[in-house]
Image 1 (spheres, rainbow, N blue to C red):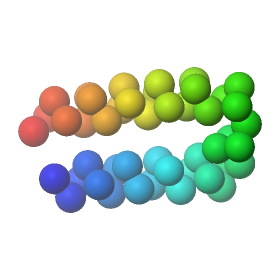
Image 2: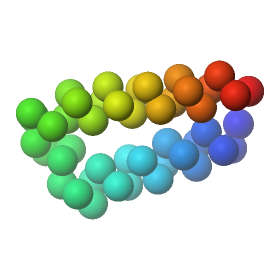
Image 3: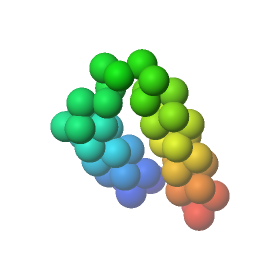
Amino acid sequence: MSAIFNFIGSDFRQIAVEGHAYDPEKTEELLADFINKVELEAQTF
């Protein structure tokens, strides 16, 4: 379970550092990609 939280945390930090969190056009794309990654990660447990 901690692996998922570490994964999520690093992903959000990356988005924040890149500044895309405030770019409406990019945010939807990144969130979709993020959700796919989380679902993939969850399937391994």
